[in-house]
Image 1 (cartoon, rainbow, N blue to C red):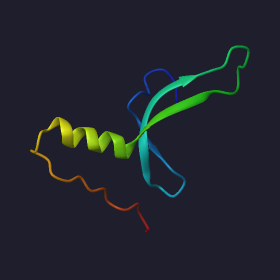
Image 2: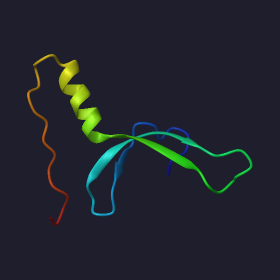
Image 3: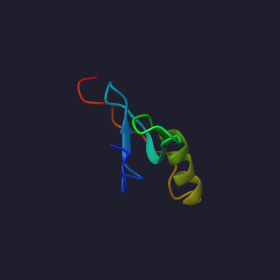
Image 4: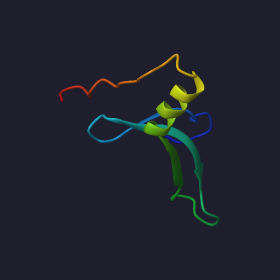
Amino acid sequence: YATRGDSGSVVWDKEGRLVGLFFTRQTPQGCSANALVYITPIHDVLEDMIKFCKGAIKEIRLAPPPGS
């Protein structure tokens, strides 16, 4: 996960809840195994979608994760 081409992929927590969209990954200089992964919180993404649509979308709701 978090390789070239993964930008925009959804990120789930261990309970199956959508938490954000993958943005980028950085590997600190001199480290080959440890990488920093950045995500955009899903709340921010959904708020921006509502603002961008200028009133055409009033609310966005997410279904609960399976088994909840």
